[in-house]
Amino acid sequence: MSRIAAIFDVDQTLIQGCTERLFFRYLVRLGLLPVPRALSYLGRLAWNPKERFRDKTYLQGLPVEDTLRLARQCYREDIAPLLSPVGLACVREHQSQGHGIVLLTGSLAFLLAPLKEALAADWLIATEVDRNGGFFTGAVTGLHPRGENKLRLLLELSRAHDLDLSRSFAYGDHFQDLHLFHRIGFPVAVNPSWRLKRQARRNQWPIRSF
Image 1 (cartoon, rainbow, N blue to C red):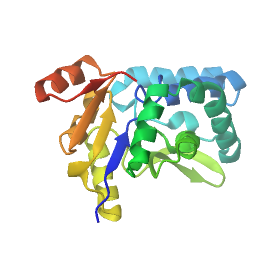
Image 2: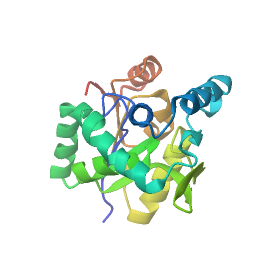
Image 3: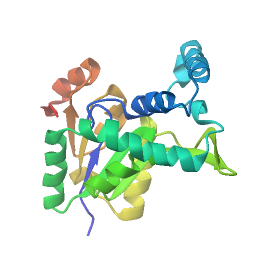
Image 4: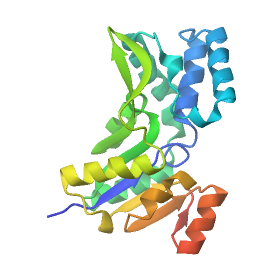
C-alpha cells in the first residue's frame, strides 16, 4: 500500500534561519575559510547572483574530514537551537500517524544529516557536493534541490518508495516551493514570503507560523 509522506523544507520553515549561511560564517569564524577567500567568494556571488544558490566553490579544497566535523559542531551550536518547537511538534504529529518524513532542502546534505538523525526523518534530499582525494571540489553533484528540481527529486523518491503524493503534505516558505505545492495533496505555506502568501490565499492553502 502506498505511504503518505510529510515533506518539510528546512530553512525558514523548520529552522528559523538559513543553515548554510550559518555554516559559512562558522567556517570563517574558526579559520577554516580565510577571510580574504570568503570575501572573494561573496564578491563572485554579487557579480553573478543567479548562481548564488548553486555556487559551493567556497568549499573547494577544504578537507572533507575536518569540514564534516565542523559541520556537526555548527549544527549543535548554531543550528539546533533555531529548530522551531512548533515545526518539531508538526513533524512528531505526522510521525504519530505513520507518515514518512522527508526533509527537502537546497542546503548542504552533510550539514543537515544531524537534523535528519535528530528528527528520525526517513529521507533527506539536499545539496550534495563532490569530493576528490579527501577534499571537496566545490562542484554540486546531481540536481540542486531548488524550484522545479525539488519536485523532480521528490518524484524520484516517490517512485522508489511508493509514496502517494496526492494524500501527502508539504510545508514550505518560499515561492520556489510552488512547483512542489501544485503536485501535493495538502500544501501548507509556513512563514511564507509575500509571493507565496499571495498564492496560498489564491489557492486557499493553509498558512501557518512555525
